[in-house]
Image (cartoon, rainbow over all chains, first blue to last red; front, top):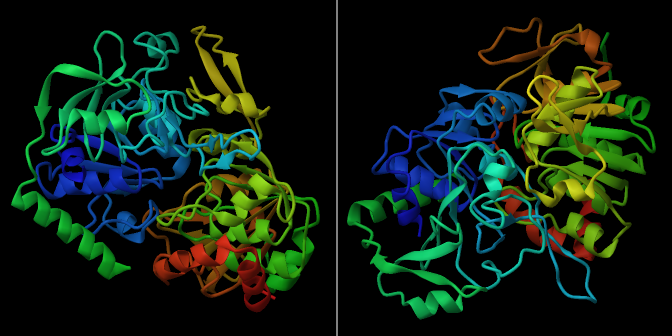
Length: 245
Length: 266
């Protein structure tokens, strides 16, 4: 999953990075096929070059290795809203068939209070203003739901025209990379469609892990297995992170 | 003009029951020691404001001192949930917690409006998000020049802002550097300002990217070396990542948390 997420950044110049899996993938991309990738974290760092995985978006290493450290209002207003960033890379608690994201609350049934999630953070405006958005999360029926309990961050709304109607500039989510495969929005309907399977994974497995009737592309691709170089780079980043903590 | 004061006296004079208080810090320079002084003095019914409430707000909420939280992302960075925050929101323990919830871009702009002494700020934000349905501090305005509909967010003007910085000089001028987050805006938006610092130096030497806050926008400076721990002060300390990991099991359990609070903060 991390390796495929990193590969999705092959042609990217700049990436606004969320912590967790997106950060792992973006750092792996820098360590392998895209050493010039400019990593941008919402804490204010532009062009961070960490040698280990940061443990939070405010990790000191991100600031010490950055080309520039800017105040948070500047980050959101000039750099993100200013439309200067290619890719936004997000995780999610829940995602629906149009790649809308919930990270706010989950409904736990009539007799229980809403379950509390961390909240929006930078995601609504990252998804609105970056030219393209990638998402990475584990694939399960809890995460891939037919209906979101709350829309924190708009992906494609209810179809292909919602983003334009709302005046959103970027293309929105272009790929959702999971531990089972890759889903991409259908060009006509904007609905997430299974386009790639990781080696050894079946369509049936992905369908079982998806909370709606998942469509599949006419021609399913298989993602290439991780190379030795990719696995070594990933291990190095992870073990350096552990040592530092 | 800033007075150099003890932490105890500065908190007692500047923070009152029922205040709206911002203790800012974006992972870096979080004013833990000052927040613990608020807990020791049992200053209560607070509306707490911060973009990224983390462990210290978890502690204030668990201590029962908070009635409302204004925020955009509440978690233990790199670890997981804030369990005292969740317990208060989901179960009302130790008291119910009212929320005013935003995105980061919205919160940053609310501080900018507050510092600019404007009633609101404008951004391209919240589009397609349900967030606006749960708050009365997000609305829309029409651009008078292009007709575009934009999000408007109400200004944030805390009664008190508390931050931690690296250095002050004897006149109470303050300098901070590294990740400086939204602290400058939070300071300039507030009626009263307390800054805790690592040390007082004879004179401030300008740092690349450093933010200087003149003493005349600050009410009190208190010298508290290590006052950001388990957060960090660039140039003085590193983040205590083990503490953030260890907080998770403590905060999951009401009894463990209460014992921790009594033993550690009191």
